[in-house]
Structures are given as structure tokens and as C-alpha cells.
Length: 220
Image (cartoon, rainbow, N blue to C red):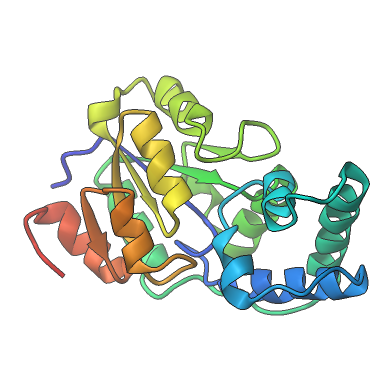
């Protein structure tokens, strides 16, 4: 039985296997605008941030016009580039198991509200989450606003809350909210990067999330 009353998941790179598609679309947007090319690692590192914060991180010396153009071009590229972004293996089973245990589930994501709602509808998972927060309605990670609003909504404190994510921004947000965190390596950031954010543990897939929740002393 999990010690947590609220478990909050990141979406991209944690529940949905979308890291490669996000990276591809950003490269396409960069090329469309003839901006300086970036490496895959540079682009994947900004996954988890809100889009505005992401483009500013990628091109810190650019101006507002360029940032806005890149954000808009990325959105259009994402919409116009049909590619399946499936859930990671065991995602739906894990969420349904936790829901049956009467654990409150939430999402805190760098996606837009429109993007998350579309993903929840396509996957059929929307009813499993008591509440969700997105980067276009809250401060971007690692600011704690998304997580703190979810805790307030449910009525639980930080000690009863676990954030699960694939980026340092997820784990830093949890730290900033005084909540617990669990890093997962199948997404955007490396195990070394995740460990530096000092989560309770590091797992490598969603099967291991299930095991860790029942046996937190398990090493993977």
C-alpha cells in the first residue's frame, strides 16, 4: 500500500513516450526559422519546461520576436506532424491500480491546457485524474505553483504527496513544494541529471514505479 495520498505525474516522457516527437518538432521549427541548429541533447533538455521558457532557454540571446516566432512555429509543427505518441508500457495499468487504491492522481505538465486535454481524450485516461495543471495556466516548472495548487485542491500536505517525472524540473518543483519525488529514466533527462536533483529514488520504467510504491527500500 502506498504511503502517499496524492501522486502527481508529469506527462511527456513520464506517462507518454513523446520525447523523440517533441525533439523532432522543435528541430523542424528551428530549421523553418533558419535559426542556429542545436543538438538533440540541447533540445531534449528543455522538455518539461513551459513552451515560452523552453524557447528562451534554447536561445537566451534572442529577442522576444524570435522567441514568439519559435513557439508559434513549434505549435504549428506539432499539430501538422502526425505521429503516434503512445503511452509507455504499463502506464494505464499503473494508473488504474492506483485509482482503485483510492489514491488521488494528478498531472503537472509543461504542455498547454489544450494539448493535455487532447492527450487525455485520445488516451481515455482523463477520468483517472482528480485534477491537472498546465504551464499556460501556472508558472512553469520548477516553480512549485502547479504542485501546490494540486495539494490544496485535494487537501493533502507535502509529506503525503509524491511527484513522478523524467526531468530535473519535475524533481526540483517537488523540492520547491517540499514534496517527495521519484525520478524515472525512460524520458528526457539522464540518470545522472536526475540524481543531482536528489529524488527519493530513481526507477527506469513504470513497472518499477509500482514496485517502489509498495517497497520503497527496493533498489533498481
